Image 1 (cartoon, one colour):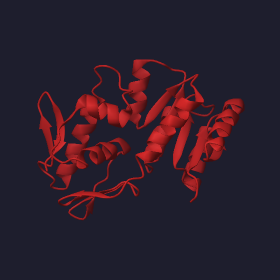
Image 2 (cartoon, rainbow, N blue to C red):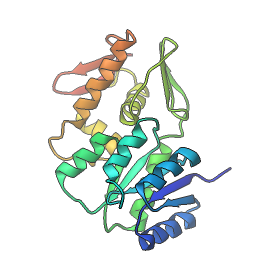
Image 3 (cartoon, rainbow, N blue to C red):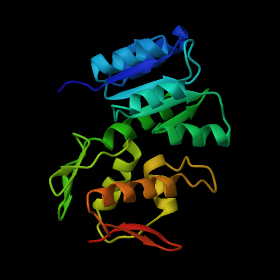
Image 4 (cartoon, one colour):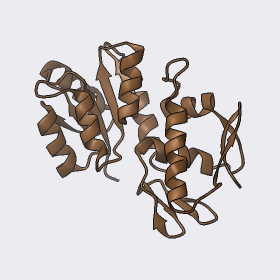
Length: 221
């Protein structure tokens, strides 16, 4: 079985070499890009299983890289940053990053977060009535029509469809999808749920997503 390929987008060669050594020792294949533009090219050509993205790149901001990747890719993105503020964390998650690590970090924590992201992408197909979700292809269909979701919307739907009817609280969704990294009082979960509901409605999926006021969300089983 081919080892997952991880793309490191990092302009500091010393940091990139340390990351590459840690990941290679853990059994991963590793590619490296030293700028945002080179990273976008490698992401398009090499189809990595996961991207480690430095926020402070020489040509343009890592947040812009996240936005560009999300236009046509659901690849897991872990941002590496020294910017430890609530606003910055909310911004990154809102742009489509899957996780972030504050520099400096321990190699074991990095490997643990990489494995979590990869594990979430390798489960069997799931279905509920006319709704079908294929985690490996990152594909959702409703009544045989494709439902185009953002990476986080997809992950939320994958969580809900595993236990139709079960109500998940905002805190549970934040813990499962963002590994508990959402700041206190963040409305990121509600924003993603509203977007998911609207996309389901566009395909006549009225009532599929249930809101339990003051509790959380569920798929109607």
